[in-house]
Image (cartoon, rainbow, N blue to C red):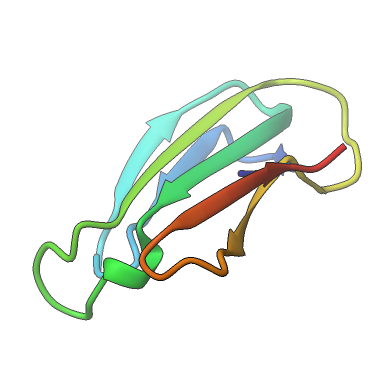
Length: 88
């Protein structure tokens, strides 16, 4: 899970998926925003179709700030076990 700042000057936010050619446009007020991206099962993804990976992107008005990693995946010593850690 990561967060970063985004400044929107045009009033339009275009969201494009990694396998999408066109994306979708959203009307938003110009200004600065905070964006959070959550994702899971990235190792299960593939280049075509549904690989089981998923994403959630959230954004809200906020002052500009440094990007930060809030939570990251760590490889487990146990086979087929994922461990997550919270970054502070």
